[in-house]
Image (spheres, helix red, strand yellow):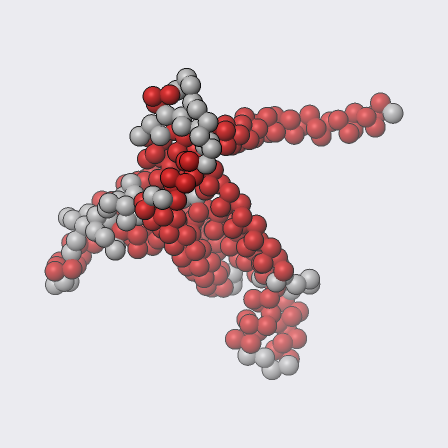
Length: 293
């Protein structure tokens, strides 16, 4: 009995440090944010926050900047998810084949994933500024009239943030798709070739259906990362110009920096709830399309 009891308790002791870290740095902050989101807690009331019910949430939905932040967050999340997924799949279909230099190409495509977002932000800030590399190349090609401050202009800043996000993380999607492609048995393709199926038909009727689990993982991770994006936007534009690239995370950060602690807590809570709901629904939808092999 003692041996059986120890065998049951032992895994719990192993998981305890991780559970404590998760509780302290994730569960407790969520509980605190939930409590303070219903108060008027700010720098003037640090010691005596007062309960104000749903006023913070009502004020948020009446704020045009918050509405713009929601739109930008959804635009960024779904656009980058689409392009990272498609780009990662296309690259995976090429580099999954055996050829000379295969591992080199995989490394090059994956390399941006290991870079810090702050470093990437500083790098592209220099490239896209008024006297940066892009404008110098345009001038050299005789198209100097197109030069502008790409991250400081309305309409172009969000485009470049999306482009940089896709450039950074398409390689991560590539590796997940490579794993899925390697798990597909070659017997399916051999049978399809004997039946006279074209490469496109094999891709549509074998590769895509059997890659459904990989699509679920890739899409879920990409949409979650897109919804909670902060460091890339903050390092590139800080939410500007104006509020053109403001997302929910930078909105929350700005509210916190202004001392509106209750309002920032409410914004963070809405972001967390939104991520959970969207991820859950999307995951359920994608899971339903998976097939058993």
